[in-house]
Image (cartoon, rainbow over all chains, first blue to last red; front, side, top):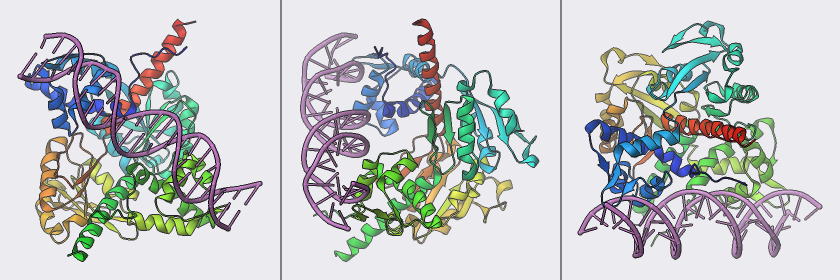
Length: 223
Length: 223
DNA sequence: GGCTGTGAACCACTTCACAGCC
DNA sequence: GGCTGTGAAGTGGTTCACAGCC
């Protein structure tokens, strides 16, 4: 029997929860006590219906006629997303990107902390980046050995190395990977990979430009 | 009358086209002449059905019984994505992230080229990054003035500055923005913004870890 | 009266399954 | 026989519209 708990949140909703939270945190700061679905929607470029539907997955926290209590909602989202725990992040690859990420604000915040950055390139080892120093990749296994599943691993290596690193990580027991290499990692079931793929993003934007130009061209023809 | 051209490609498909292309380019290199939907699917962790459906939007390029001609398909995808043109990229913000991006392989490749990086912080101005030097933001307008819509603008500023930069860009006539700041940009209709949101990614991965742990805990209870 | 919470309709994308062509 | 291309069914997510509560 599958116990369908309250934690049955659609992927699409999940991707929006951080957005809601950002607005809520701002409202907390300025001291606003309640917020309506329409407000959230307008601030985020969504529809009120979708906001209500999303929030309804978290439980019935709204008050009809009034809206949602900002603090209650904020807390609930934090709880769901596990934002009351600090999740440790390890970065593999201390090149330009890895180094930038190690020092990026969103990467060491109230809910995440970069606890290690690894590389195999001797000259990079020992270099200090933000709050950590680059270690040799061979130390990773030992560093994670107690609770590998707890860590979020970030792959910021050249694409040639990415699959090997991913395999190594999953063999160690890591189940959450954020991949910056332009390659489709193959990983065992149960492991979640999120890809940040710059060239795909650029392609889609380029497609948008191209369509725009094609349209303009057609418009000219049809005059 | 709307002339529904062949360029009516679903968003979801569009996001996969780069993946197909990567495999195709590899096949070109190793000299394989044809490829089947099942192969592409397996290499990318997709289903054969979806590959065929995706490719069918590009036209009927496959040969029943044989598969797809690698070169033909590759060319068609390049054409659709506008990959036979080099799309110029400008980066706003020369901090850690912006600097890393300016030198990232995917960012200056056969189809994109970083043609400028801008900041307002005097000490950074003039610094050489990859193939370009940091300029003052005030020069941007002049640099883009002839064909602003052609450029893909990357926002790599602190989040406080991001909306202002976006507004500035759209007023100049930029229609494609890749945003790394953790904020929902509001832009006029017709402008496409793609967000790369590290904290959302980390949240989703953290949620995955949390679920995994909750499950393990429940399993223990139920023994 | 105002706004939430939610069935029901709708839409976009995926999967199935098979006819059509090599 | 093998594989593509595509109607038809299925699925997940969004939008509509309104009953229910303040």
